[in-house]
Length: 483
Image 1 (tube, rainbow, N blue to C red):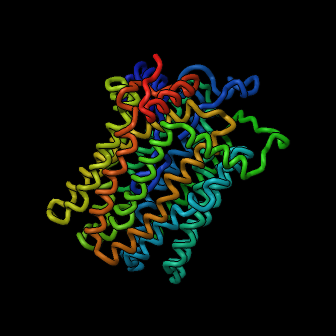
Image 2: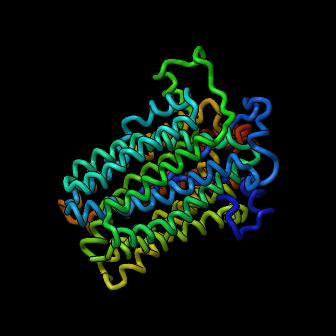
Image 3: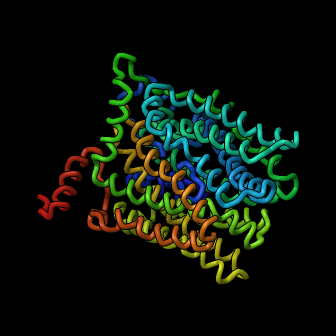
């Protein structure tokens, strides 16, 4: 929760991104998505160049088809991320605990099925997984406006839909994180991921404001129909997209438990990845205080309208877009490795502005915008750097399992956090719970702030991984590293 957006020097940014292997997708308050991984292009079949023609991806009709579907679905998802909390808080009068349960239901699948999903996906065509996931999400989400129209919608219905959506999203996201290398050439991965991330940020700018206005006009349950339509558009676009993914033969598959273990070993056997996962996971855990309680805090306690609430996220998303544009220049200036602790410190302190709003309620809107603007900008800088590092060092056959293993940790803590902070919000109050979450996010930065990133300059490539692991091990033991 990074490319070649319009207005950026097209000659400079792809070059910087190619060096930085930049790509973003880090779950912030809601969860985005986050994350393609570099593929071993030697595994691509002959003739793959036909799928990824030389030159800019603006001339690659296959990629543009997939991209257009993703852009629409990202826009629709932004509407639902606003509409469902409004539905729960204002229409169904959910308590803090109930909102916590709803938030947990949205991401519980990453904890429950996240690890086996990665191993399963490594055995399947990722585009096909995404097609079915889009269809399931459209059908499940479509049940909410239908139940509202019939006058029988209750909170447990929303829980069930959230759980189904969560499972489908696990399979979609893990597949989506790994599909880009089977659509474009290796030297186009950064550009492709960048374009996808830019549209996500643009959707984040337009979607919440449009969603807030739409909720005010036709009510939250029926605004969700727009998202249903965008998921169907993504479904159709993926049907017409071609890929050159090569699956392993069935006899090459290991037992599921062994394959899951291999993915975990790959992630946690890398000392740099361990620190990144530690910061990301802990930040997501404490970030659930804001994710869970912000709708109640803003809509109920501060009395902000749905339209104004959506506008906060629209304006804050400008920070994400600027972060995507600025990342290659920042990376070039301070170094790829140092961008990780620098960005983590900034997004670690931003959440403290949210509970401060209670002391200055007349400044609620600008303070919330500033908090989420800073968070969006710095999270993009962090993700574009760390996700691309993951991309370029991971072997093709481990793509799904690497992403699923990381998501299992960094998203798996989110339902636990949602339940905890939902209960705390009902027990000690919303504002004290928001303070606990904000302070916790500062401590989350320690994994990368105290790591070797400050002195590294650039993060290692795949060929440098053994050396990087040795250096980190020596540092941990207090021994000098060989020159």
